[in-house]
Length: 206
Image (tube, rainbow, N blue to C red; front, side, top):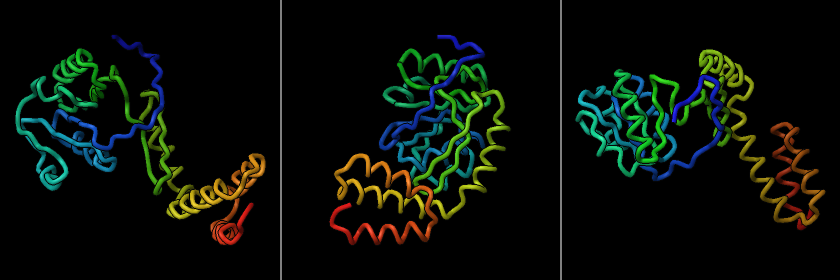
């Protein structure tokens, strides 16, 4: 399947836990990809005849195979990242993946099954921005602005929201009232949210 310039990518969040993920290439770009993927619980393998030395700092988390690309290395994988500095090889990897119905991200060509947006995390809060490949620099600029707005306090803030939501779902049978409470609490300050949690914990019904 060929992709036109105006291809629109469907935004999605994937559960990568225990999924086999293969990165072909072991340079700085591949290392950056690997560091990001390691946070999400995938079973990560690196294939390359030359390995960036820093990869060995993560040898307990990454299966490092020092070898040139061979299609056998991608079989049965869920996701493949073609991250070599050889555009022709990356394209071949993409074709092999299509033949095996494996999702492939080609770092040197926008003709990929998926692209990775600019992202940052605050605990369970994940914010991603994409310009559909038109301007990664703009995506990063927007992410920097959002990082300042959604600072470290949102880690605790979101945890409290989750705790209160669980209490409300357990103690409130009125669907309208549930929505009112859940919509209201997102506008509270961190201290007010802490107080609201204690209040709801001490009530038998809401």
